[in-house]
Length: 146
Image: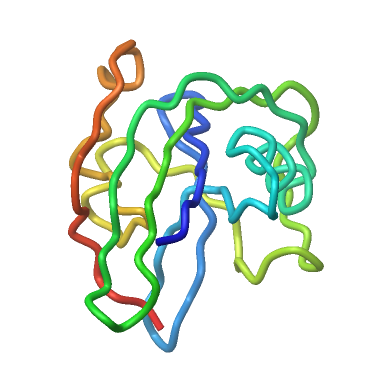
């Protein structure tokens, strides 16, 4: 099982996502990526956001953890979601580091209307973002992409 840290970046009632397309279907990914060997989750998240979005961030508390189990289709992934604050820069995609098509700020009520990866949509609410409690979701209901 691989581990993927992701960022919950909140601004003006919306969270930052990266929009991708496979065939005719769009899906929205919480920014993040895979740690390099010997790299901690927080350091990996800072590096990924600098590379892909050109921002410097403060990685705060881990707020959600959930598993995407692919049942022999792909490698399983443990997703760790952190609160993140942008300290410097404005998010802008760097095509040298990502194949995302665009950045999208989604309102809370839009999360249940899109395919979100990792699919924390049923766990994320505006009041949850303000909560200080950590939560393990267990397996996430994640449509297979690929």
